[in-house]
Image 1 (cartoon, one colour):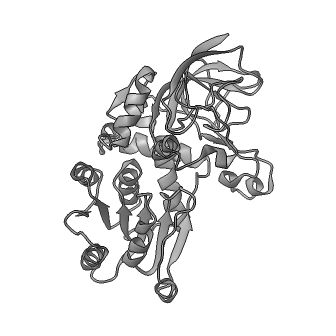
Image 2 (cartoon, helix red, strand yellow; image 1 turned 60 degrees about the horizontal axis):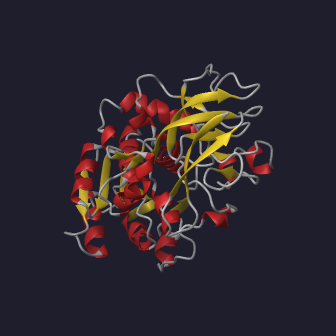
Image 3 (cartoon, rainbow, N blue to C red; image 1 turned 90 degrees about the horizontal axis):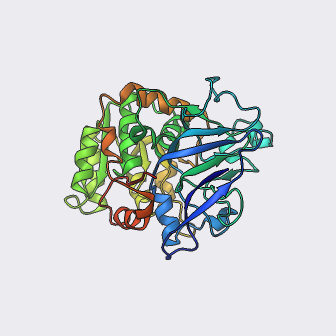
Length: 368
């Protein structure tokens, strides 16, 4: 019998309730994870506010939010002996895993599009008032379903650094892979929150000749520079879209960017980003997940300049393994520990969300 706490989420606008629940055992193929750290991602905040409805994805309430997590194996169900790279698993092994679960046999999975699985399930969608209860990251445990992809965390990578791998880092890595960012290209990153900082670092690691980060929070712009940005644009100083587009054109000798990544999460950023793209530029759209929001733009500029927009939702699960390699190879060069420096015990989750909502922290964490 495994007994632990969950932070039950009943409805937007209501405080989390800490509840103690029990799970008899891990079933065949399942892995019970003892959660050691779960970050507060932007989508968690949107769900908390009600602007991102988990019920719209087939989820139910009450549930347990939280998905960007790292943990240790607590129990292995029958038949589970190794991770997805063939590394042996045992009690205490530190692991990360995609927070969404594919069936591996539908038409999309068979085409290599497991992030578009027709039978996709994920953390934060299960009910918190019935077994297995541990359906999100804000709890003492999380139950991985049978067939889940899971990877062992390298010994040299701490929980603080690994916790962002299974969402923010893997998402931006997948975005750059989707648009095939090349050596020597120019990249603009709209937004210098956690995803934006990862995007800056990954773009430089992929060989970008110039990375420009845009934000309005001085501390984030300073962090963007530390993560490898060659130039930053403060929206408080360059107050209009025209001003910011002019700066990008000036920094790129009039050509514009090859790749622009949107991780602001506001539709108005899209038209602005498209104006910063040069000929054959590729726009990576990640941040806008709130249904029903729109923007206006002139499609002729999109057509005549041969621009491409790519929407990126989730990622192909093997990207997570590459994300761990990235962290292992670059952690000594990047201030990754600053991303989730603020952490709160599970009992203080309401305070943590208030702090994260106030943008006092780049990425606050819950450490049960």
